[in-house]
Length: 329
Image 1 (cartoon, rainbow, N blue to C red):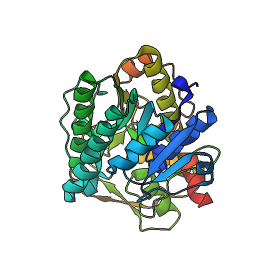
Image 2: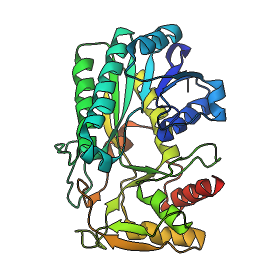
Image 3: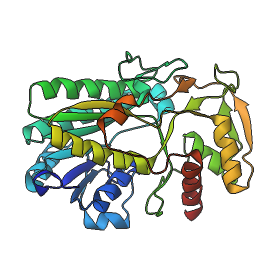
Image 4: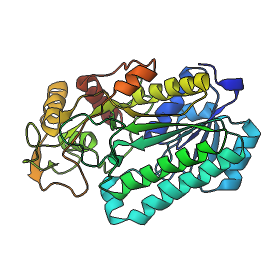
């Protein structure tokens, strides 16, 4: 991939889980990278040695302005933010500060600095209840939690700003991102993961108490929650495809990012046991507040717009890479 005018791409949150994989994808494509990360949840790794690394926050506009001017930044991939649904329910102001206000400050600096392409990592949580059919981008967003609302507000900021500026936006509404780099260069570093796969692996390895399955009588095929899981390396590659598409077409895009199929909690447990030969101990608990029973992506727009083909699209590949990464730690 050739970045426009051969200028670096700025990746906010580039020391975090998804942002770090995006950095790897850019490096693998021969693109020069700048990273801005406050290291509140991310970690510096060996692959960061070849990037322009700035420790700091997207709230720090003088720093962001300096990075954009110094490196003639024309494209930003924005991953920085808080991501825990349950935490957002009990501490909503943190999410409006980190996600909505932080993004506002970054967007303002981007416009002021002449950035042309701004790709934002949004979430399927903006949809809320989606029923039992794949949800498309035309659905009316009705978030069930402050996490989803904080992302939706940022989407609207981008849409409004790009109408009155020369900047274009790319918005990906992620479904459930999991897995680790197949070369074991990067993965998740969560001591107490809140997502299903991390919790299941920790329970299987005896690091925690048995896994709690939140809900057993939900309106799904087996009574447990169903999600559209997508491998993090495929997510990273999709960002490169979208950036190329934006540079070529000089336009803005919003689309779902998933595989278009769902796996239940019990599907994940069963496949993880098959992949590892170990048992996942689990027990049932009450459904969690602010979570929809079933969320699956309609990816017709993604398939139409982007020349992107996932490489790790099976649940087996996703879970085996997650397990191998957890063991490597």
